[in-house]
Amino acid sequence: MPRADVDLSYAIGLPPAEAIKYFEQKGFAIGFRWQDVWAEAHAKAFTVAGVTKLDILTDIRNGLTDALRNGGTLADFQKQLQPMLETRGWWGRGRVVDQATGEVAGKRLNSRRLETIFRQNMQSAYMAGRYQEQLAGADLRPYWEYVAVMDSRTRPAHRTLHGRVFRFDDPFWRTFYPPNGWRCRCRVRTRSQRDIDRLDLPVSSSEGRLETIDQPVGRDGETRPAVAFRGSDGKRFTTDAGFGYNPGRAAYQPELDRYPADVARQYVRGTLTGPEFARSYRMLESQVAERVASGQTLAQMRDGLVVGQRWPVAVLSDEYRQLLRAETQTVWLSDDTLVKQAVSREGQDIGLDDYWRVQDVIERAQLIVRQGELNLVFIRRAGRIYHAVVKATASGRALFLTSFRESNAKAATQAMRRGEVIRNEWGE
Image 1 (cartoon, helix red, strand yellow):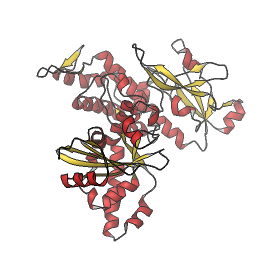
Image 2: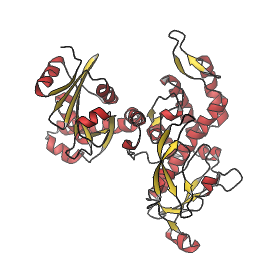
Image 3: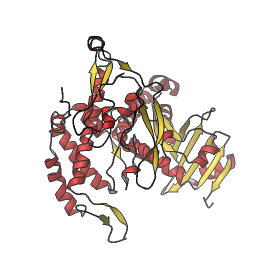
């Protein structure tokens, strides 16, 4: 059992399998400010504020992965990275400026920032691993107790949660499973029914006690929506800005409509460039190929392969959402669509590495056509011609990508003839 203060060197020295799994499944996201990649986006994407070069991000993540696997220390992490950062001009203070263009490429890194990166990523990965382990044992120990380190360094807000017990499936844990702030040392202890009875521990419920607030996230008055918990004593607890999510719920898809579009898009990009989506995609592609070879029909394949899995692939602007009369901004890709595209010829020209382009095709489409009230067709020429179809459900409560394929000029002309042209910058 880890010590109460969650000693980081102890935690990463174990090499916990679930922590490594959590960390390695992340894709990448780019943000100049720490606010640019928000809350749940961190569960799917690795980012360092101000680092806008993918190769630098990759080197930093590789250093963290080595530390997780081998029980490395902060000193090991810095020793590995500092020479590389110095060579590439990313070590020190101030901004990195592209000498050829004069553009600001990012913010340099120093010992203090590396320590923050190391401790926060290790702590989040470790606690994500703990969450998965505790979730697996929830049938025997379904009550979870919030434990703060009750010493002089413990923040008052974290003290208010110390000793509170909630069921493992209480919505409280979606937001407040530690870490809940920078250098947070809180943890979660699991309890059995026997523990509850023997120690006479009161079990709390978050029903009616969770509320959405506007939380300040900077010095310029900027705010973001956040969840607060109000205890029976009237005291309200909120996490540090940007920490209001549970890193261990890696399979959980957050309510992306609660977040500004730019933040939600970072989460989507992290999902589609991460290995979790890649594994699901390749597995489905392989299974479809095997069943095609065995002579199965599409209906037979769908019956065996479609289980309702889905991934976010884009976030619509208010303009397009209103055209579709949709209540949501998030566009989903279903396993049903992936199966159909893998079977049909139209899916053969689009591969795993193309799906992150859906957002770009929608945002920068040169031709947009509405077909009926529920479909929008987006066509963009970007070296290749991409054709994306977004469909709203009849209720308007969900949006799905129903087709994404490589197209041609003839198909664009046909699309214009078949529907109402909303935008035409095609030039033909």
